[in-house]
Length: 267
Image (tube, rainbow, N blue to C red; front, side):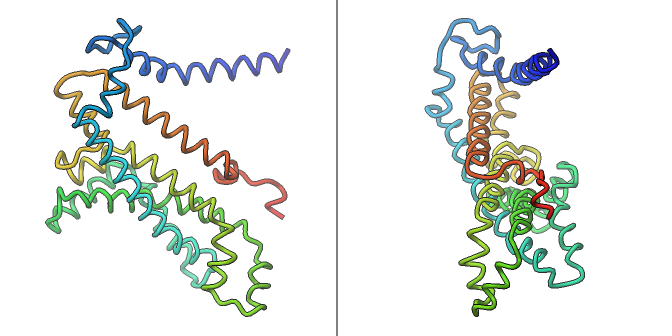
């Protein structure tokens, strides 16, 4: 009886959490330009307009390019930093780790204001590439966490064996270390990509409306008139997030990536 109640509880919680997504998906099926739910008539035109409407398509392309490039920058910063922390080559390594985590620890509005002040002072405010660099720095904590977990799984005896065979740091990284941490690098990229795709505050503070990403486009659409296309875009974003995290769970050790360690790992 207790197991049945537990299952019913989790089913109810899952339905409760999924209800907003169901409502948004239904709103995007309206036949007319309305945000009514249940939908008044059924049509998939608003889903298709994400790709057929030039403005929405441009915002979608901008978001994907920004998110992919920013995630690559985050990984490029996090990988050597995590390697440095793993090697413990300096007594102030923990201080470096705090710096690596600090962008994500601070409230997003504080980070956004800092980015705004920096780019305005340097005269680059509004340039499209400023959002890429800002997101790359802002989300560096995500790949830093996953890659650090990846380094923690490496048996140092394997490294010592490689060094005994005459391998230097470069060869060890290429042939031993990186193949072991590759799933953690990919998952860190995936996490940064998804969050950058949905981020609004830093994007707005760095480029304003000179470069429309999907979140900025949605905000503009709210200002100038409601359209079910906003709901359709939201559904696409949810599907992208589910797909990316599903792949991470399928091909990686998701519990360990989230910091759950088994007893065997501790020994």
